[in-house]
Length: 395
Image (cartoon, rainbow, N blue to C red; front, side, top):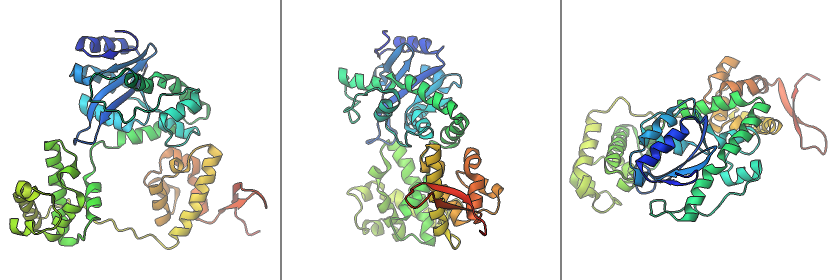
């Protein structure tokens, strides 16, 4: 196997695993399709160590489990750009929890490159490297892979180790490595990788007039569709759309005749799944489950809008000073929670969602002072656009 090649057999995969076993850092990327199935289909895994990039073809190799030890190892840092989807699919395919992930997109947000900086743009800005464009929408399931297509895939990991060194150096130089590690743990350890049924339910509920007694019916239908979509390995909305579930729940059909009268259901749906749907609705209405999500009622305290305006301006100015992006410094949901129900103490502020230790370190005291009216924002002068946080006094 050459340093830059396509692995297409188990023997080549095992040789690659041996080669990577001693690597402290490995660049990683995947190519997959997520449009036609419930579970995204993995068609390529790209890896790179100091010797160069290699692509693994899952369609030819089959069992990728030999990669599991490296993927789960805390002693081998996996360098991935915009890592969540790649980690999620490999976690499922390999059956291993990820260890030591370094997301270059997240790291870039901490050192002034923007929160959603794409890899090609980031490589050019940080390393002066011009990446290949034009193959992101390729059909990765087609075989054989074209030479330009394969080169594009390998370029996704070819320069990642150089980028990793650059970003790691910047994080350490600015004293932000612990901030980055804290946010990484939040995104790749604490955060779940499965679908959020509560979020799906909330989205479906917004599509129709779902009131108290029909909420259990919708919850039952959401869970039923999720199980069916997994069994069929189809996207959930290709089984039945959210608005259709809301329509069924609001009508709560008692039998097949009632169900068939609901307008807009896809052709063949009633004959194929009608009996199951009627049974799910009946069971939910007769025996409402205890875990039906409650409607989220947001009732902010008076002055929420004004608090949000001033803290948003504060966060923008603080982010400018730190060369970060405001949405990373003070996420939208954190801002909403703080302004809707202001904390009475630093301890309460630290309990707000997303108010991590590194955010508390940077701006916890300032936020409390701004909310209490002890600090304000002023312009530097008549023609200045620079904002400064100042102590507010009677004078």
